[in-house]
Amino acid sequence: MPDSTNQIPCHSGRFWIVKPGDTFNIIASFVGTTIAELKRLNPGSDPANLQIGQQICLPPEKVCPSGVFWLVSKGDTLYTIALATGTTLEKLLELNPYVDPLKLLPGQTICLPG
Image 1 (cartoon, rainbow, N blue to C red):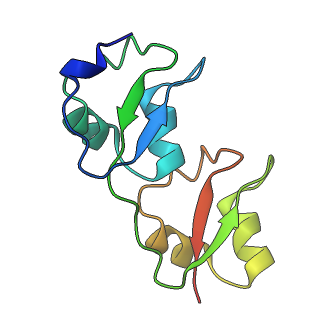
Image 2: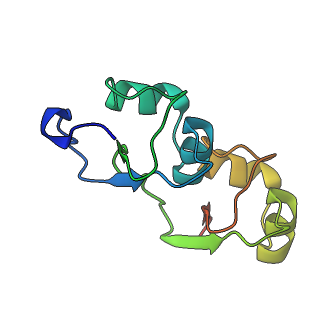
């Protein structure tokens, strides 16, 4: 596990605690960012060798203009979320630019239109 005394400051104050099976791709998808941004914020972390319990600095939370979110459940797709909420797939993609529509994860939040 990395020595926390040598960790670069995390200006957002938001962290992800690595669990078994976590990758930068999973973390980025879950929190709505990119792998490149995680690498930038965690220059001392080796994405190929994440350690259970390791803290990964996250970017500031994205703002959802409506303040309304959908909590993803197993089996949800952006299409089914759009149908259930009376919006379009295009609008969901616009509001959630970092979400990979093919890799939604249970527990992930999706910004909905107002």
